[in-house]
Amino acid sequence: METILKIRNISDITNKLTPHNSDLTKTTREQVTVEKLILKKFEDLHSCLRVNQNLPELFKEQHIKYLKDNLFYLPSSYESLDASQTWLCYWIVHPLSLLGVKLEDSDKSNIAKFLGKIIFRCQSPEGGFGGGPSQIPHLAATYAAVNALIILGTEEAYKIINRQKLYEFLLRVKQPDGKFAMHTGGEIDIRGAYCAISVASLTGIMTKELVDNTAEWIVSCQTYEGGFAGCPGSEAHGGYTFCGLAALVILNKGHLCDNQALLRWLVQKQMKMEGGFQGRANKLVDSCYSFWQAGAFPIIYSLLAKDGHILLDHLFDERALQEYILICCQHPQGGMLDKPSKPRDIYHTCYSISGLSIAQHFLNEKHVLGSYRNELVVTHPLYNIRPDLVAKGLIYFRNFNSGGST
Image (cartoon, rainbow, N blue to C red; front, side, top):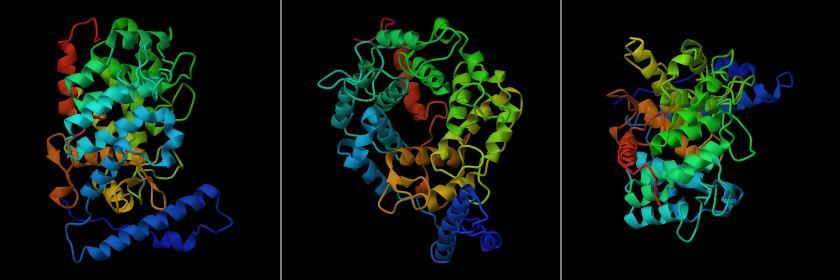
């Protein structure tokens, strides 16, 4: 277990550049403000290291309590996410699984019923899942719901998914040139392709017809920067890049993209001082990209391995990323922040913990910063679900009647 902390020293920079300097752009002022907040966090922890060499510490019990408290009773501040209720289920059950929490059978059953067809109905009679009960089916909501059901891992949860209707929904939003609309008549971007391919592969309903031309359309979204945009001609973005790369690899078409350009873009998105990742060029660090950006690296490793390139370590600074998450993004009462000065929320908790898991594990090696108690369970980089739960779901649906569930 690693306990050595890298201490950033940007005093020369911050002494010259202040957030109130009128000669600076708004973006630069915001960047300097964030750097000063983060530097203070690092300096505070460095003084504590003289007493406790096991720092930094992952507040596991606090995070577990925070997530469990929000599992069935969300505060009113989440009212604006009414169309993201399936996401909230995933954002809670996934980090709990990485923290090693086993939900009660009754809780698993209640979540499955909420997502499925008893009392409430997030699953549409026309196939796919809406963001909440009786809402129209949407690819993003469907991805979140299927992931949550796979994580629950019970036969009841698996049987919730009406695979025949799901397949029909996916075909309805599929476009002739390979892309996918997020819902019938909805917006089209690379998220749709990833969500469709992910749920189809997990539930065993992938067909040639469903993915015809999709890999080629995804590749057209790779930009001159190296990352992927939401659609051809737009700016490279961390979330879209993960979606494009993961979808290509699920389709066994990872060789179609420019992996060297992609790798160059990814490493440039890790912030030199903060240690975390930004989502786009000239943007602030954000803890959710701890997964969206870092999660792309293990996928690239698999492509490099096919070309005979044997790696001995992560191709990003995994220790710096862990420092950013553990030192700068933890709320003392549980939950994760985007960055210092921001409030905690379930979304950033999910993807910070996911990114921390990625950073801690490289093939069969562990790179855990601080005490061994900080270690998380491994997450599958293609789906962001525990690998054992992915395997369990794949086996179930592989052996399932091709007609789908009732």
